[in-house]
Length: 340
Image (cartoon, rainbow, N blue to C red; front, side, top):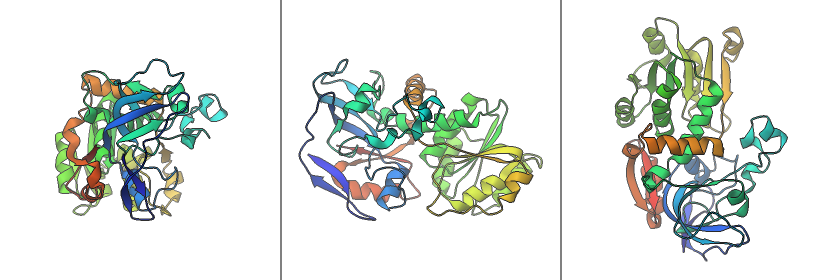
C-alpha cells in the first residue's frame, strides 16, 4: 500500500509499505478522505514537536478488517477514528485536562491518516475513539469532525458570553470553523482579520460581519473604532503568527479574554505582557479534543449547523501528496482533502 512518511525537515514522501497487520482489538481502515491540517504542515517543517512525528489525523474511511475481540464494528462500516484518546481515569482526565493525559498521545493511527489503509490500535477502539458516520454524511464532511471538535473545545474553555463581540485572527479552516460556531455560543458580532483576500471573502460568506486585512489596517485601531473604543470581549488566535497574537491582545477590552487555538511559532515571544495584568486580560489556551467534542462535532455537521463542504477547495490523490502540501501553503486554498 501507499503511505506518507516524514523524511527529515521539509520533506514528506509517499512510499510503498506492507499493509499493517492487526493485533487483538485493532481494526484496519481503508482511508477515503483525510484533511491536510496546519499542524501537518508544521510537522513537515519541523515546527511542531508536541506530538509524535505522525501526519494525517483528519481521516475517515471504511473498516476493512477487524481483529479478535472487536465488538460493534465490522468490515464495511463507515467510521471516523480519533487519532488520540485519553484514559479518562487519571488526575488530568478527572480535572478536565484530558488532552494532557499521559496516554493521550501514546497511541496513534498506524502509519498515519495519509495512507491507503491504516491500523487503529485497540486502545483507541476500546476507549470509544471510533465513531460510526451517519449514512447521510459524506467522507469530506467526516474529515472535518476532528478540527471542528478542537474548535468546540476551545470555545468551551473560553466560556463565550451571550452577546459577545469576537475577533478571529486568521481566516484559514480553523478560523472559519470558529466563525460558524460562535453564533451558536451567543456571539453577537464576529470580526475576522486575515492577510489573504481569498480567505477574507470566504469569511464573509460563512458568517463574519466584518473582515479586515492586517496588511491594510492596524487591527487594534480598527477594532476599537468598530466597538466604540471598548475592544472586543474575546479574541481568538487561529494562526501561528506572533504578530496576530500581539494584535489580539491589544484588541480585547479590559477584562477580556484571548483564546489560543492556533499554535504560535516555535520560540514566539509576546511583548508587553504587563498589559495582561494592568488590563486584566486572560490568555486561555486549548489543545486538541476528546470524544466529548468529536461526538458534538459530528452531530453539528450532520444537522447542518456548521457548513463544511463549501470549505473544501481541493482534492488531491495520495500519490501527489507533495503537490497537496504546496497547494495548502498557498493563500488561495482553504481545506485540502487527500484521497486514496
